[in-house]
Amino acid sequence: MNIEDIERHIVRKLLSRKCYSANKYMNIRNVMKGLPKHLRDDTYRDQAIKNLRKQLVVVLYKKGDCIYLNREMLGKAKEIASEWPETKF
Image (cartoon, rainbow, N blue to C red; front, side, top):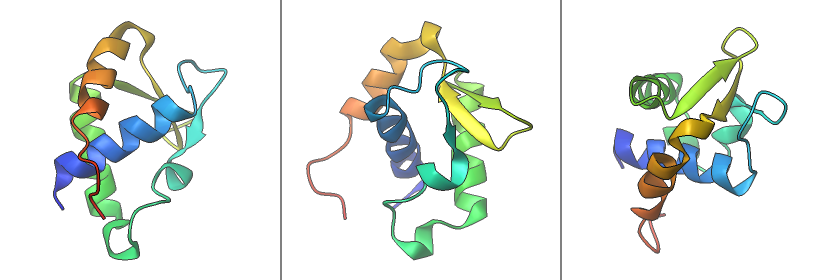
């Protein structure tokens, strides 16, 4: 599993919870649930979130502890999430 797979997991989880604005956000630790424990490492998470922020797909909130999707980039977020294979784990 690489960083792109973790990015897809993050985007897919935020899409499924409909976290599109600052009124509806998710804690970063909760976003990582669902991944195997050896992939929940902070270095993988930080790199994946950094890449998504560069693409303007996600926005950090509450001093970087929470995350939500950028409404203007929902199309790109859905495109990233649709690349998810049927069975990855």
